[in-house]
Image 1 (cartoon, rainbow, N blue to C red):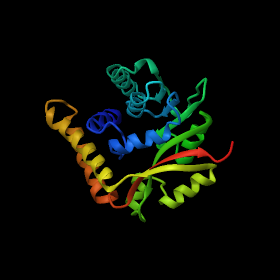
Image 2: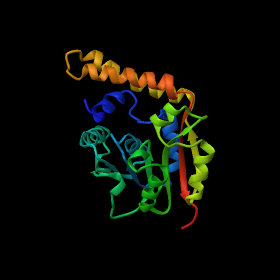
Image 3: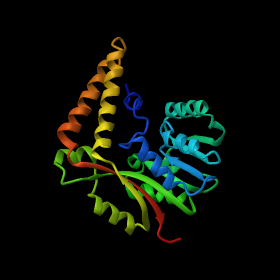
Image 4: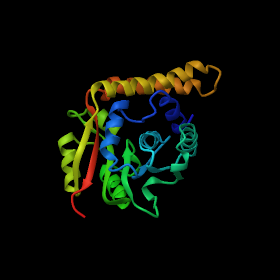
Length: 245
């Protein structure tokens, strides 16, 4: 079972691949979409859940998503068909960090996908390339709630605390106009859904050759969360506008 398959099963009960509940997603989209007929781009869209919710909420909105995963894009197409928004959705199988589009977008999203660009600031640099005048970026990134252990830092990478993260963003030429810091309830709900959905798939498919690996992955992830990073990891979604230009 590869990483993509593990992620698909792990997110079965939490299609937003980030520690956000439905109300938080709705409020971020309300603040992020600047007008009813906006163009929206999701860099690293996965199964397209952010775009599907934006399209459903705004009947005149048009959306595009970019992801390397063929199976995730297939899921997004099928979900768009069921929701009746497929005619307003365009999906591209491509590397989001190298994607080019023939037009600009009013909102560019990249939530929980900064690793695909090499970090937060490279993600913002890529988003800036697609942004229309007056547009906004909605980006989601992890941060340290407190000093991490060496094990946590090695596991989750080069993060900063929240004030330092914002300092870096502002110094890079962005102004935060809204944000959401995931609550403890959102963080825990996401991790329980991730580990529980994956473990449940394994238990429901005992004859599948991938079942033991899936169960082991769920157990390992749960142990890492509870024993290594639960008390030090936070997640913030920022709505940003270019400070100038």
